[in-house]
Image (cartoon, rainbow, N blue to C red; front, side):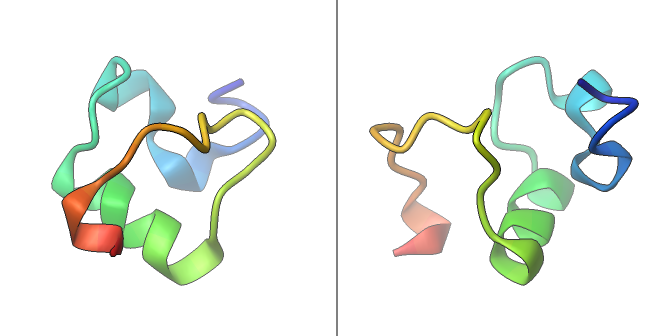
Length: 44
C-alpha cells in the first residue's frame, strides 16, 4: 500500500501516527485503509 499512497509514509510509521503521517492526513484526509475508529488527538 505504500506504493499506492507514498505521501502517507506508510512504510515508515508501522501503524503508528507519526508526525509526518498525521500532517498528511490533515492535508489530504483519510484513505479507505485508515481505521476510522482510531482517534488521533491532533486530528480533533
